[in-house]
Image: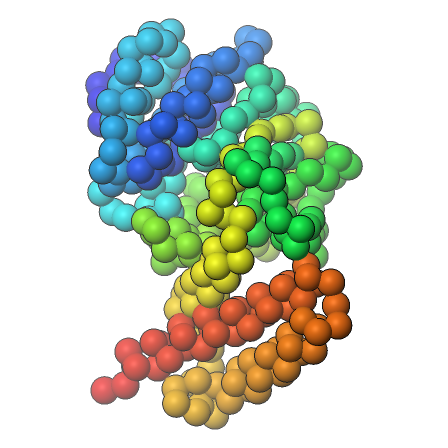
Length: 319
């Protein structure tokens, strides 16, 4: 961690950006953050390097030197995993509001000011905001709005409104929490979340569900806006399959299924669900539009991931 003079009073907000081997994209994100217009508000920026092998550290240090009036710090987290990196940022943050974005995201100029204003005007524990795509290439015809959630896009213009249990919860590219959330409910589950190149998830959903279970309100605000780069490799079906499989396997490992009525270490009902999903996918591939058929195929990869995680848990429990 680089040395940085500590202001006498805590800032109003802490912005945390976790990064892994994306120094070029990170530089764009930092430039967008440097352009933030927060009015009279005070904020700090923490960049958490999660074991990058590229020029991430020098990129951040050059940025901090070029913006001496910005309270910016570089942190290094050797434990691989996005949740580890976020938790380090939370531990080091001093703001009453803790806001997250990613190293492939460009926040709009009033992003942080609007986030701070929302948390001041609403009695809520957390928020999520609008995320528009920056397509590296034009998306294929099958990649319709029904897949936007898989690539962290949310362009709902309604609101602000409170998110209920049935609503889609915020994405890490644009979310924030009052510090008390972490003091009272704990941090991100390090068993969940992306680790290096493993496309796992679930850590954000887990934390937001804990917030709701404790009675905390989560607000979606369409005027808190960022733009999310969507690289070409994320527009392939192979990416979606891998993402769904790895996320579901990770979820099964973190929340084991009941150890009963097993076949080869897997609950029998999962095998039946997989077979039904495969049959339905075959039928829809022949009769339905491409996006609808592929959305059904994703269910196959979900069950395959759950089955893989269940088998791994079963083997670990076997004497």
